[in-house]
Image 1 (cartoon, rainbow, N blue to C red):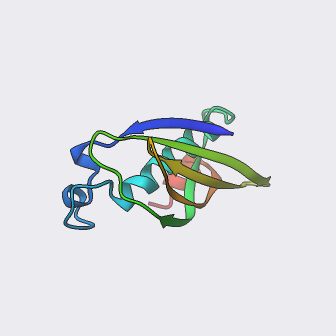
Image 2 (cartoon, rainbow, N blue to C red):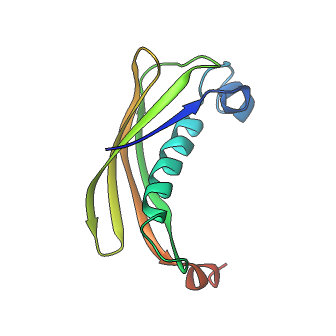
Length: 117
């Protein structure tokens, strides 16, 4: 199990990121937290010529979280085959399960990937 904590700040609210009108944790911020957790976990295992990129995300955002709340991301690597890594995840605030879902990342050669831009 991979675990990482984040704090909800004004910059991570739906009102600030433009995904809604309320000052609660934005769904795009939940995605960012999970992607960061999974990215950092995988990056430690790769050499400097490789990285991972997110390619699929499925999230159920179940409950709101207030500004200042601590969000704990718990991710589990369910499958790693060839270049693909599949994670299941749950996110909690101090009291509740607030989100859950699945995230997929693909390993890429950095130079080859950037040559496509």
